[in-house]
Length: 81
Image (cartoon, helix red, strand yellow):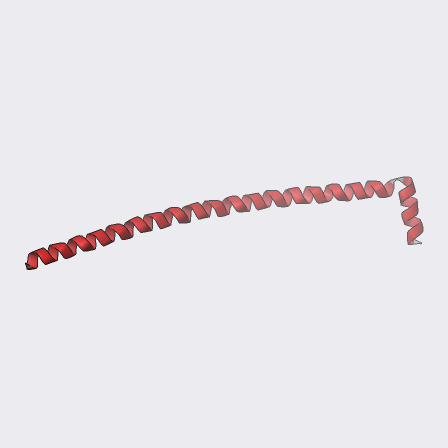
């Protein structure tokens, strides 16, 4: 029975139309998923840039703190001499 129905749909052209419609639906879904993926990637890239900038600032602060510590140690040694 199923085979007869498939044959009938194929002969009338409805089967091909349904297949084409399914393919179009799949392509539309893939396009939506691609847009969502791109949006998510943009958010991740932005977060990565912010983290990188934060790390750079923290590195500069640590460098300044080390310099300050060295300066204070030199001043301490200078006062003791």
